[in-house]
Length: 196
Image (cartoon, rainbow, N blue to C red):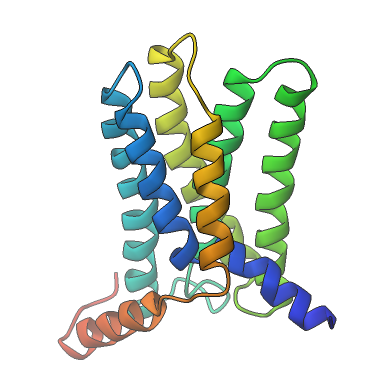
């Protein structure tokens, strides 16, 4: 496997085609937990992550604030949010070394995907950093709600088995959301959307 093939394979773990179904699976799993309201918090945080990233992409397509900032990294924002939440859940309900290992693994996965976006030339460092910030903001919303309502015991194994299956089945698939958002941005620009 060449370096480029490896980077493409790595970056595909952050694709919306993988992470949106994983996010839905996590919402369904939360519905079956003692505090079902956590599913609503998850959906609200997901809306912040996905909607915030999409809105920034459209705005920056119309009015880029800087030549190096035209499209915040959706792979990075969604990876930070979803993989960060999975690591948080495993740390919250794991014991001993598993707690620390899950946090370290979550950080490494997110950073690897973020770095792959820059190395592949898909995003600049600042675009990737902005994606990371959006993902962290969404994760903070969910983490705050989960910490306040955290059940004493949950079965995380079914969640992680389902997530692993989804990742294996969907890895390499692509949703062409970026092109749709870019087209919408160009439509707004053509319709006379003014930059501040």
